[in-house]
Image (cartoon, rainbow, N blue to C red; front, top):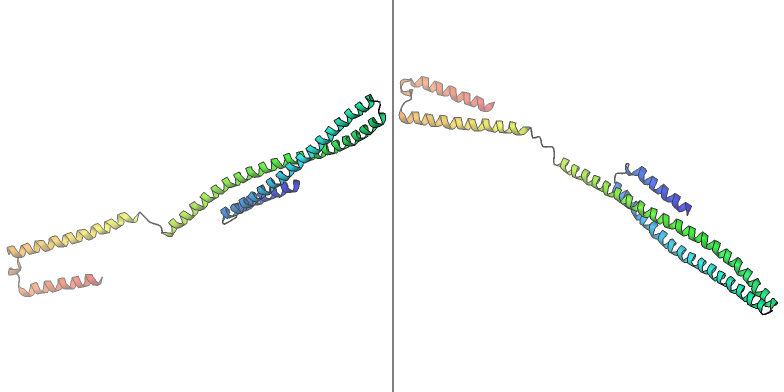
Length: 223
């Protein structure tokens, strides 16, 4: 019995030492819970055997006590009848049953004490099981948190500070397009209204200015 308790204490201590170091604490706890369930089952079987043995010791002690009482009465009856020899025989058996009664009472006391100790150890195992199971739930939740964090990290880090910059660039592009569209629309109106001054400018000067502008656009595209 004492060896059984010492082994359980060592097992629990070992579990507590290795939990934080284990890469998979839930698996370690599950192994411990399976082992503890087996220990509880074996202890309950042993308790059943002890209970049966304790009842037998009690029955033997009670039977011996009954025979002591019976032989006492028989010895009294024999003396009253003047049968001293029969009274001695009855008293002799009474003494033998008294010794038997004492022996079985002692065995009953030992067995009953062991039974009570075993009941306490079974209760302790069950409490231990529940405590470790609660710890399993805690570590299971921690592992889930880690797994979810890892999945989130795999998606990459999103930098929300780039959002304003992105819209600023988009706004500049849209503004450029709007400016180009407005400029082309104004030029078409000038052409249609005849309000341009191209007629008063020499052809060579106009061609030269047009060529300069084309060259500038080509340079801008290269850049």
